Image (cartoon, rainbow, N blue to C red; front, side):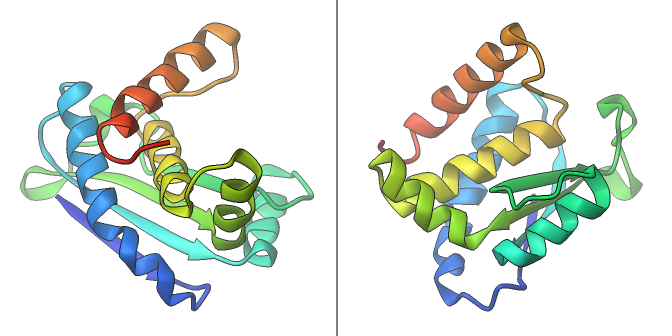
Length: 151
């Protein structure tokens, strides 16, 4: 499994999450029974950068905490060359990590892991557009994260 970290925000604190992200990726693949050699990128960005991405691609004129771009709409089509699965990109707003950790009363590590897990589940085809889908996705997030980092 390959996890590429891109630090466009120039915030060196983000590198401390790579091991957690790798654990979350492996745990997610196990829980969802999706074996394979997964590849994805995590791009850490500023609030201004994620605002521009949100405006350009989602037509939403505000910053958000995380945005995912899946390379495949259909996970059955995600198989690439040499037994690798290309998932896509997760953009994480570094300021949202700090702000939301303080707002929700948990560690920045927990928030960074939550945002990654949330983005990863989106890449794997999960969404929260309906109450049923939201319940399923948020339950999965808790199951995955609670073994990795405490609330």
